[in-house]
Image (tube, rainbow over all chains, first blue to last red; front, side, top):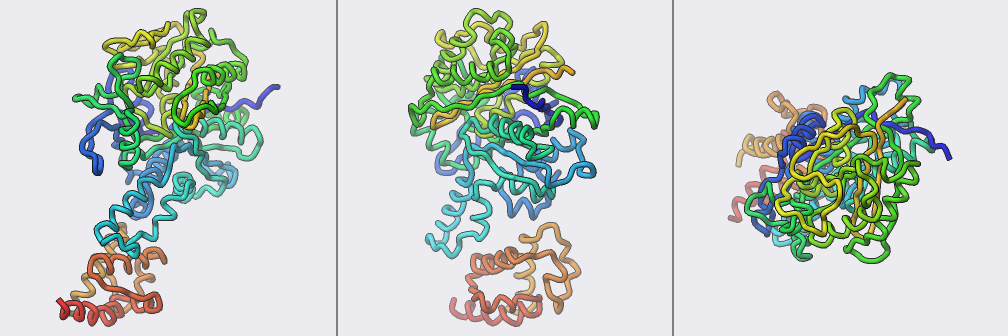
Length: 412
Length: 87
């Protein structure tokens, strides 16, 4: 079946090591980590990825006071993506624009803040904010973008644990192909560092990273990795049908080539390499390519002792020794785990490889875990290759959700 | 507490609720909503902040008494003073 071609025409992002694609890419090629140490309520100091964009660039102070951090990140990314795409609403009706934002979770930050706030008043709920409900509804980040940009088309979030960033793009592709919208603003965001619960949860699981140097705390594939660095971030794209993008002479970053979403159906938290491999294979089939055609595999690996090994097992099963030109890297080593933003951000960091033919590395690998030793792994320094035409992006999440998204260099 | 002090307490709250607004030329006899962009949620904020900062309760039926700075002063100053007398 021949699909309607969908292309990426704009990118807006904020990562712990860059507030634009240009800054982000420069950090990834320069080995610059964005992880620092923050105070986490009740828990003391922990490594975390913090974004340092200027929220007042696109929001009034009142919007910041009323809205959420996830909303603010979303608005920044959406506005930057719209500007980058050079789309305007003179030729596109606002009701034909869809906003699809992936989130790992939403609402924990505000609920924790309110419980903390009423603790100062003897837990009297009459001090509970009347903003709590609009701040914690699951569609909040997308709704805030709709309010800020005056977009009247469908605007909602997609809950898909840490696969959510990919899901934002995949869902947008589907909606464009169905003709439901003409433009999609899509991707993923995370405000996770503002909730102690996520730190405490990973700590209780034995999966929270710790290191004296925060910049070395996120170390996928390294023998001494000890868990996840929790990070905030966001990355939203503008997606359009190819014919519409060509009509307005838009810049095209790449084309959505294929994807797959499946489920492990085996455990709440433990990944399942068989299902992960199945997800990757089905995405490759969906893209009508072969595994040897993939030039970059951006791994999901979060630096948990078991999870990295299992993803490597899945990748080995699909790519093995028969893909000599396939490079494998990891972005979380620079920015930690940006949760709902991870899939979207990590894809963005690799897209410039279509033009510069450089694969950014996985940093912080001082002693490669032999169980993570994959052919093509790019360690600690960027690697120049002859060409990059196809990028495969893995994002997996709790409750066994797997997603693989493949983006190809645009060829007319 | 004087009426002017009450007005200042209310203005301090409004400055936090509407941080983008210029409050320097507010007319105290005119409705606040005609001079500052305040919606119904913002008015709930004023009620909440009076509760949090000053321990003053404004029943829903009396929200209308917060319409202008003058009406705020007339309504709230006795409440401030009653609280002060209790301390």
